[in-house]
Length: 167
Figure 1: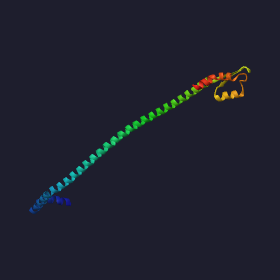
Figure 2: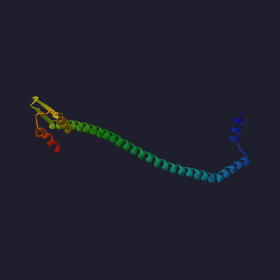
Figure 3: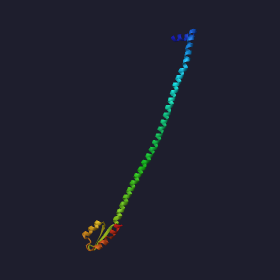
Figure 4: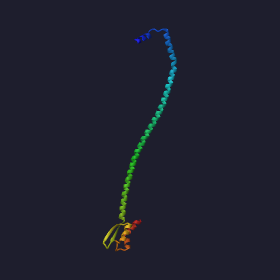
């Protein structure tokens, strides 16, 4: 009910003092409003400049993060390529090691074949196949397995060995 009373008073005729008071209040408000609006505009403008500065910094940081992400991706790709290359290198190194071992075994077998000496003992009517090394030849001479031969005959029998070791 109070609302109806206020509504009727405002809608009804007003006295001259009320009109003058309302006019003074409106003029005082219009006089004080521009400096207040200017201050609010300056504050908003400062806030806008601050946001623009922060936005520029954020964009720079974003670009930096994107460049780091790109670098990380390329580094990861290089690492993957390096790891596979390393595995390939390890594999080829292992294979070449196996190949060298096999070649060494073959060379040792060839050396054994080349240095094999046949000792013929006519008195026993036997032929001895001996892998000729200086220690074995010396032992055979000391054991006198070749009892019927002279020293010159023994040296001729071992001549291929001595010729093959001097080369």
